[in-house]
Amino acid sequence: MQLIVFVLASLMMILGAVGVVTRKNPVHAALSLVLTLFGVAVHFVSLEAYFLAAVQIIVYAGAIVVLFLFVIMLLGVDKAEDISTEPLVTQRWLAAVAGLGLLGLLVVAVARGADMLTTRSEGLATEVQNASGDANIQQLARSVFGDYVVAFELTSVLLVVAVVGTVMLARKRTAGEA
Amino acid sequence: MFALDPMLEGDVLWTPLLIVVLKVLVVFVVGLVATMLMVWFERKVIAGMQNRIGPNKAGPFGLLQTLADGIKLFFKEDLLPRRSDRFVFALAPFLAFVPAFLSFAIIPLGGDFRDGNDGLVTWFGVETRVQLADPHVGVLFALAISSIAVYGIMLAGWSSGSKYPLLGSVRASAQMVSYEAALGLSLASVLLVAGTLSTSGIVSAQATLTDWHLISTGIVPFFIFLIAATAELNRPPFDLVEAEQELVGGFNTEYSSIRFALFYLAEFMNTVSMSALIVTLFFGGPQPISFNGFTLDIPFVPNGLEGTIWLLLKVLVFLYVYVWFRATLPRLRYDQLMDLGWKVLIPGSLGWFLLLAAQRLARDLGWNIFVTTAGSVVVLGVCYALMLAAFATSNKTRESQGVQF
Image (cartoon, rainbow over all chains, first blue to last red):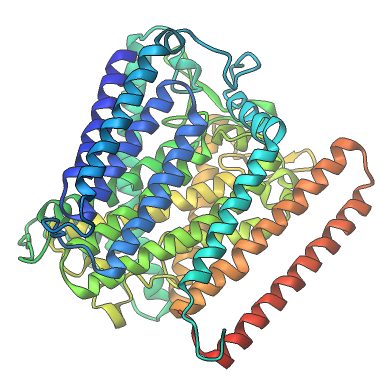
C-alpha cells in the first residue's frame, strides 16, 4: 500500500517537474508545477504529516502558483517563448556546468549519507504521536514558536524586507524626487 | 492511517468498505440533488423578491425546471473556439467541478452530538460518523479545496483565447487570493476557541447556544467569514468575475453545452457546501438548539436523524441569505473590493484573533481578564490609528505626486 502510494506520488512529481522544464507555454509549465506540488502533498500524507500536506496545498498550489499565473496572464507573456537566441553569451555552457556540479553534489551527498537516510532519526518529533492527530500541529508549533522562534522571526523580517524592497524598486521616480 | 473514523482502523473488512462506498454515493447524490434544488430555490426566491412568479411550468412549483435545463444542455452543441488552448479548455470545467464536491466530504451531515456524545452512529454493527471523511486537518482541508477552486475559473478564462473571459479570470485570481487570507484568519479564531481542527470536534465543542462559535468568538469572525466566503464563491455582490454588464458572461463566455453546465453546477454546489461549512463552524452543525439545560427536541425522531434535520434547517437559512444578498446588494467596484479585503477584513480579523488569544492567555495564566482585555484593546486601537495614519499619508502622496505604479 505504502509502496503504491509512493510510486504514484513520485511519478506525479517527476512528470510535473519534467513538464515545468519542457513545456514551451508558461501556463502549461505552471500547471505542471501544480502537479509536482500535489505529489509532494501526497507524500506528506503518506508520511502522516497531515498539517504539512494541507499547508503545502493552501500556500503553494493555492496562492503562489495562482500568483504566477496571475502575473503571466496580466503581462500577456503566455505565448511560447523563442529561446533560440542567447541573451547572455556562454549562458548555456555555464548552466550546463552548474547543473552537472549540482547533480554531482547530490549524488555524493546521497552516497555518503545513505545509512542516515535509511535509519529513523529523532527529527522534530519529541513526543509520542498520540491518536488525536492534533499532536502533529502541537509538535510543529512547539518547535517553530519555541525552540526556533528567533529563526522564525528573522525569516518574517526577511520577507518584509523583500516586499518593501520590491515596492521601492518598482516605484517610478518622479522629477521632484532625488 | 488516513482518517479518524474508528471504522477505518485495523484491517480492511467488507462491511466498512461497503459503508464507505455507500457514503460516497449518498454524498454525491445528495450534493447533486441539493444543487438542483438550490438553483430552483434561488430562481424562485429571487423572483418573489422582484415581484415575478419564477419557474412554474416543469413539475409542481417548477421544481423540475433545473432538470429540464440540464437535459437541454446535454443536447446543445459543444463549441470549441479556434483560438482556445484545447487541453486546458477541456480540463477547466472539471477543475471547477471536482473541488466543489470535495469540500462537501468533510461536513458532518448528522449524528448525535448532544449530551457529550461525539457524533458516532452504529450502522450494521459498525461505529462510524455521518460524514464522508473526518481527516486530522479537517477545516484546513476545506480551506485547501477552496483555494484550489480558483484554478477552474482562472484557466477557463485564459484558455478561451478571448479578452473578456481573460479579464474575468485575472479578476478571479486576484480576488480569491486576497479574500483567502481573511477567510483563514477568521477561521483561526474558531480553531482557537474549539482547540481542534477536525470538523466533528468543532461540532462537539458547540453543545449549547452560548457555546456556538458565533457567540464564543464574539460574532465579528462570523461576519468576516461570511463576507470573505461570499467573495470566495464569486457570488453577488462580489461577482466581478462574471460581471455581465462589463464582461459579457465573464470567464464562461466561450463555454457551451455540458461544459457550461459543469461550471453552473460547481457554482451552486460551492454555495451549498460553503453554507454547510459556515453552519458547521459557527452554528453547531447538527447540534439542536439548546439553552440553559433546555433542549429543543423534535419528538418521535431518533437523535441521530434529528441532527440531519437541524443541519438542513440551518443551511437553508444561509442559502436564503445568499439569495437575499444577490437580490439586494449592487456589485462592488474593483477598487472597493480590494479596499474591503485588504484594509478592513484582514486587519479586522487579525486584530480580533489577537484579542481572543490574549484573553485565552490571561485565563491560562490567571491574569485579570478585564485588565488584559482593556490593555489589548488599547494596543489594538493604537495599531488601528497607526494604520489610518499610514493610509492618510499614502493618499496624500498619491494626490500630490500622481499614481506611482
